[in-house]
Image 1 (cartoon, rainbow, N blue to C red):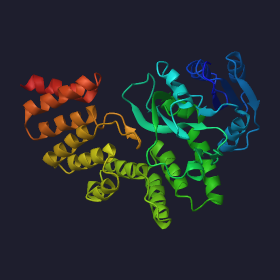
Image 2: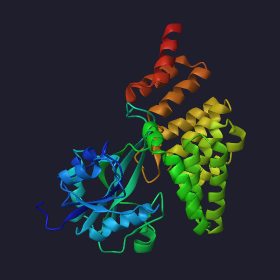
Image 3: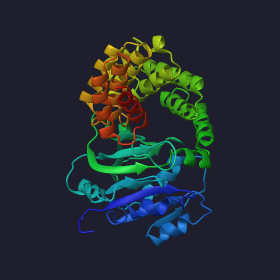
Image 4: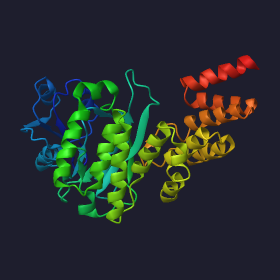
Length: 371
């Protein structure tokens, strides 16, 4: 690399031959070294890594993702460290921008734009959660990973609370929570076991309840998920902390799935008051109004979602809630109100932004046949 400063890629892997080649090839030309910690692969993962030029370290698995990641940090020589999961890859046209951290920032930690796909194969580009996620940090400052599972950097300990994360215009695609991969790796049972193990030592950590809630939600165990969300909220408040926005997002999603609209309204306004810039919460308020057959109020909320858009990725955001999904529900509400011209306009706007939106196409076809 031509830059004087260097960038290290650090990763942990285990039996990732399906993904690891694409992952490393997406970034190998813009990093100065690749440090791979292997936690017990029995397939061709290690050989693929070595063929791409990586240094591979063996780690005896001890049910601790953070410990494995921290071993890689010990060996990294770069001025900055970039970390990925094996089931991720960098958008190739963006990859070179990763080196901007070496010369163009005074920050100690920098984010990328993470695109988490969900659903089944083949991947649908509109089925994604979006968030700015810190993935680059200065080496030698004391950054370490913590937690056995859902590991995260000790950002607060090193630099204090980060109100706004500086983010590069670099997209990283994550495939690990697609249905097929989840089932294949049995991630749910593994994560539940490790989270419960952590709770034995860290029972007052409200993040553990949040992560348990997300695990139960993924397998449609909504009552258990809701219980852990309430525990998380309670423990955050006990520690005099405002519960983070994803907790409220998941809470109201569960209430909507349960058709508990009266239970969700007007309480959701309290969450929106805490996070007025969070488009997902506004969208869920719109869905609550739809469920209560308050269609005019819902239209107003969905129009506000369009105004907010999806550019603020400090919160985890479901793709479409500030764009095509809002247009779809505006069209749906106008249909319920008998205002068919406005419904057609909204549905066409939805389809223009999401060409394969099945519900919008079916609704539009129905309207056009009846006109």
